[in-house]
Amino acid sequence: MAPYRTSDADVVDALNVGLREARHLRGDLFYNDVLGPTPQASVAALTTPIDIEDQFQLAFVTFVVGWVELRDDQYSNDGRAATLLGQLTRELNGSMVV
Image (cartoon, rainbow, N blue to C red; front, side, top):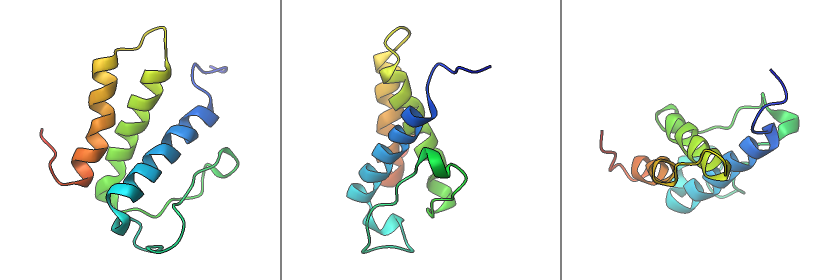
């Protein structure tokens, strides 16, 4: 029930940070726009897809959860959040440990 603990804008900001990090680590990830700017999400266009390979989508979801958790000062578990944030790097570099 609204209002939610985390705003849409905060979640979108976290996704955009993850997208920039992914561009830094794996420029080839954005295969339809290799030389163009990093794709950006916006609150105004929440239903607009971002063109990345399906196998990496969960890495972005995990990153966003970690980012939001770090910002949640009341219930933050920094160790868990850091693990979630690092998952993006591990998955993009092919060194995911299950």
